[in-house]
Structure formats: C-alpha cells, structure tokens
Length: 182
Image (cartoon, helix red, strand yellow):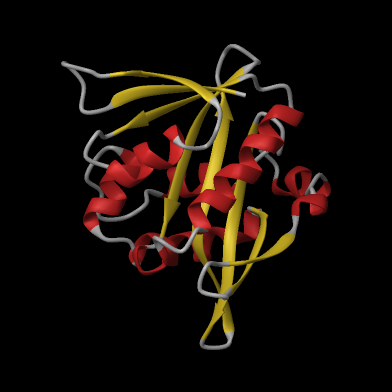
C-alpha cells in the first residue's frame, strides 16, 4: 500500500488524551506509516512472554515485511490505535490495539499489546474499548481473538468488557479462540 494513500486518510478524529488509574496522561491515536521506529522500540521493550502472547510465537525481532504491515493501514479494513507517552523528551508507543478484517467483511481479528511496565494501569482496556467502537462503526459485528489461555489478564479483560462472547478451548492449537460480538 502506498504510504501517501494511508496518510491522506489518517483519521484524526480518533486522537484523544486519556488519564490512567495512576493519573498519567496517555495520548491515543491511529498508527501512522512513520511509526515504524516506534513500533520497533515497543517490540524491543516487550518481555518474551508479552511477545509470545501478542504473536503466539517466539520472536527476537520484527521482520521488515511484518513491520511494514503493522504501520501501513487503510483505517477501515485494518485499523490500529496506539497509546503514546513522552519519555526522555521523545514520544514512545506503549501499547497498540488493532483489528484486521477477514474475508467476511463483518468479521475481523483483534490483537492488543501493552508494554510490560505499563500493564495493569488501564491502558489496554482503554485501547480495546475504543477499537471496539471504531470496529463497530466500520461495520464489524464480530471480533476474533487467538489467545493463549495462560494470558489470564487478557482473557479476564475481554470476558469483562460487557459484550457477548464465545470461548473455545483448543486441544490441538497453542491458542484458544474467543469471539466477541459487538
């Protein structure tokens, strides 16, 4: 996808500042094509378990083609919201929630990650809440998550969001499947 196409469609209406449970200011905004270095920095600061829970595989770095995919979005069929804070006088991304539409236009896959030192402060819930609303606005009726059952905080978060859901345990796969109905 042409980066200029992404930039022209950048949905500024989803920019917003939130306050965490610890009274910290976090800026939420859509991912931009220029966020590649910030996504690499986020990845470098994730623990191996956080990387595994996000990608459901062990990874030591982001391949260039995956990084390109993570920051080049059409903002309708693919959407990602970043949580941004200032550290040492520059912006850093501390969390991302995204959905990617599947072959069925009313369904999408969902993923979320929050940097380890920011977990437990409500950032993930704020990201997920807003991405659910955006997905619904774009005609998504069902979000699918592949989730490792050992990721208890994420399982609990999604079960307590107030939406109807189904949860299928897998005997053959590394992940369970959760369907959230918007």
